[in-house]
Length: 132
Image (tube, rainbow, N blue to C red; front, side):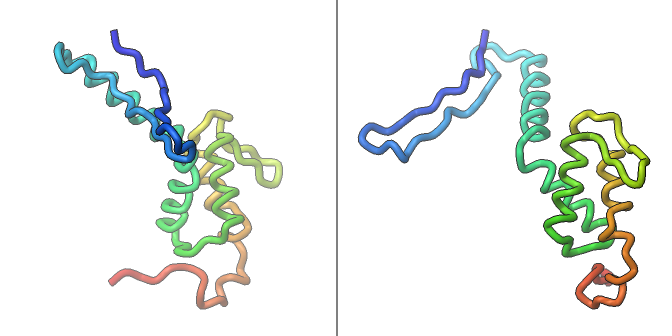
């Protein structure tokens, strides 16, 4: 039985220096294939629910859709749609309300005012460069 309990190790006399034990689920003495599957699932779930996942993924997908330098407001709107799992624009609702809903995220990317405004088309700093 392995338990992934979070424990923080503090250094005596230096309260500002502390670190967390690394999580691990594999028993080195007895190796079983199911342990590897559990470890992989947990690592992916940890990455997926990390605080930086929504802004990171939002920025990368916005860039692939053609805006290489999106505004912080645009990135935040798309991140919020990813976290909340729902995006509402002009009375139309996208997503089912679950964390990580890509329907809501893509709707936020495509239907946001920064993506649909004509004014930004005249700005040479807006958009993205064409790859060779």
